[in-house]
Amino acid sequence: MILPLLLTVGVLLSGAIVALDRWWLRARRGPVDALAGVPEPMLVATARAVFPVLLFVWLLRSFVAEPFRIPSESMLPQLQVGDFVLVNKYAYGLRLPVLNTLVVPLGEPQRGDVMVFVPPHKNLYLIKRVIGLPGDRVSFRDGQLFVNGERATLELIAEREQRVRGVTLPALEYLETLDGAAHR
Image (cartoon, rainbow, N blue to C red; front, side, top):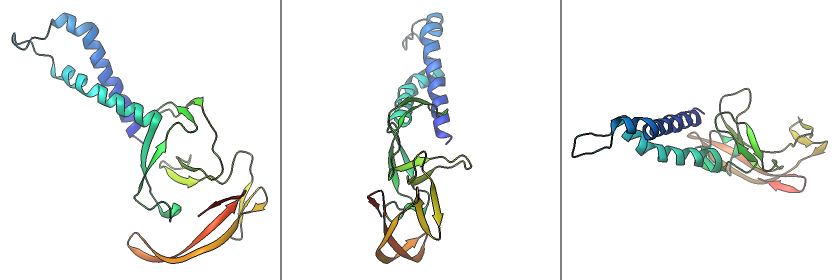
């Protein structure tokens, strides 16, 4: 979660150095001439080389797509611990990096979507499937999921063993159906 902040600071700092050199320092320094021995300052040369790369990575990760590593077993068997997923950053709207402020709304989450989010009570990202939408009443009673009073149906489709963090455990795989959509 610190990477977006570091990228933003890197883009702003290197961009400021390049702009400062272009509009103020270069005129005072005179033209860079390797033969005359007037080299470009190392900080300026580094900023000039790094700025386009940082800007590209910042734009890509902030507005297009961002990779995430699966942190837990909660989405097994489809998503394995340690797998990478590439998240579409503009599916629900464009947000400002670091501040996470919605600037341009483009869509709303739908039941069944898999989302990456940071809950308000933890400083880590989670990857979960959407089961409730705004206004829905979601409850879990006696081992059963209910959305707006309707029970999600579960159908056992596989019994197998699964290795999780080096330990072999029994695993039951269900097909859950809610609002006519089925999910493993």
